[in-house]
Length: 318
Image (cartoon, rainbow, N blue to C red):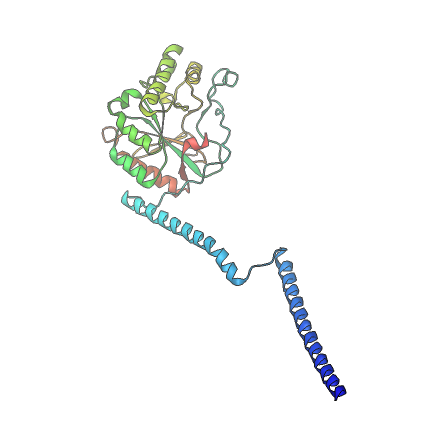
């Protein structure tokens, strides 16, 4: 009896060991499969990290997907708003958005033929008509300050078109508030002298009074002291630039094209726009033009947009 019992126990032990070996073999096979899958994943993407389970992967990707959807939604909303603004102001095409400002601003130098004696040696402000850039952008600049059209302010804010103003005190002093609204909307107010006189006919001292005096007006009224100056009529001499430098001026931009309410005028013989061109116009209304400032802006944007240009902010490139 004892032998039979021993044999039964032996058989039980044998069967238990067999089951343990089968389970161990199964676990080993599963481990091998897992290692093979991991190796396959590494071979496909070059990563040595273990990929998350599908459920984890979906949770990790959800924030990125939501961010992408949010960004796409903002783009759609922005486009819809720009399209609506263009329609309100009678534009047949939506103005193009300017690219981001350059991370490294271009090096601006005086245009050949626009130098004065000892221009470089004296470190005088560069005189230029175009900003060196390959981007299809132009810069809108508006001179003097005679016309103070509220519709113009609304139009430019609605369309989000950047521009730079060059102001003369004798034309703005009766309504500093109009240009204060402009400044509050992000427009840079620059120097165009106190009285818009023909500067080369004046002495150095008189020129300095015209330029530095306007610096003081802009600082007092708008809280900033400009670094950009445009001489009236685009006329200057060495004394002009010396006086401007002494007042804190760093740049003296002129223009390559001028836009009116009913036509364009060009400096270059090809009569066309070029990347980085500075465009001039004036604060004028029906008393001087056959139309309004919004009429002039419509003519300006029609050509610029049709030729694939966006309007950028001049100060972002200086």
